[in-house]
Image (cartoon, rainbow, N blue to C red):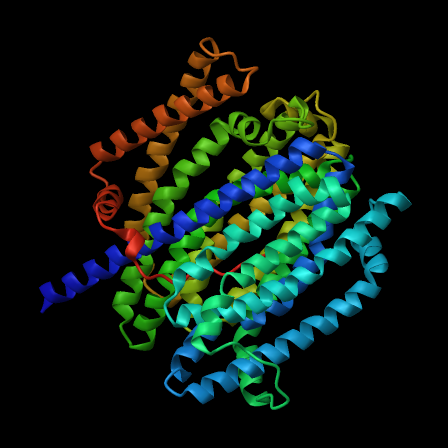
Length: 558
């Protein structure tokens, strides 16, 4: 009996890794195109006022998307649709009600935002004092307002495709979304000017939604407008989604406040903040999102069936592997940050000073990569256990702390030269103007670390903490990552005299070979420690993980 249970658990854990690898592969592809998008923007605009306007134009549509589209979250829609698929008419009526309610609510809010955009942008971005810049910001934000509706409808369609186990269709959508934005930069912008950038975002939204339409039409489940809205079911979905929606909205508001502060700093501060944030989001998406999304359906099943011990075991396994992967990512981002930034963004108008400042911000964000990844798992674990209020409270505390700490750090940086010189000396940016923006990602990281700590405490109180087992993995991964970082740093200095780091090929080879050398040492250290996570990963890679059925992660923001 015990052996049988262990075999079942082993298959489930193996399935976790395979599903995470599949989701990670899709995330890697989407993030790759996202980096191509950012490189194109950096190439044509550099870090300056135009790129500030572009990134600022996303924030109000993004807030609307998170606040409203998350009410039709896949984590809510898929279980209800699965329950109703046995009765086709019931499923269709439910979909029609969801689609109609969401579409008209989003359209109404978007129309209001369209007319009040001048006032909203003036309130949220007080640093844009130039009338021409503000007019451009308003114009671009109004075009991008179409995207929340398109992506929200895509979420509804994603519920249908994933319920029918067509996981590839929704998983490929973020890739097409970034492709549309790249088309806007490379094709539409030269023709339509700044409007072309907005048209590219809208095209990305159409592609995100459109890839699913052929199958939806074939299945006969295409949602339609209806006057017979099932208010009770809509209310049920809204109430289930509300805590998550509020939590996401507060996170967006804290991010918006940081950008409002950046708008009052040197021109280009919004751009450098967003570029560095997007870079640090790569490991968070590939590791944190992939493992937490892969684990969520099984965690929900375990808890609902009363298998509490298996629920805890699965959480511990996922947590250990998130730590296993995110620790070395944190180390490499600290050590080879300048090479990463220069290779990915360093062309055209993107100067060496832009590189140094972006690399410094990337390092500040990297301090919380592990915390961000593990927080995603604990939040979904608490949701699977039926806890929605506590994660909301934790998110409120951490969002407020991000704002307060960032304000304090900016004040400290401006008023105390010793602190400023210390911060600039660590990252070698004393000669770079506008270095105060460095305090914003530091405030963000400290808030996210507090978020992870509070979630850890909450989860430990509700379940057995298994702290010793997770602590062993953390010790192995952290120790190996420190050694990896030291080796990579030493190799950077060695290759500095071998390659011409003033060229793309030279800086790429310096960073790549230093990183590879560090990773090899990381693996050998873990082999010497007989690390269980490394063994599990190697075993899972021998299986055909690309054939795994896994619910794809939904679009988190524009």
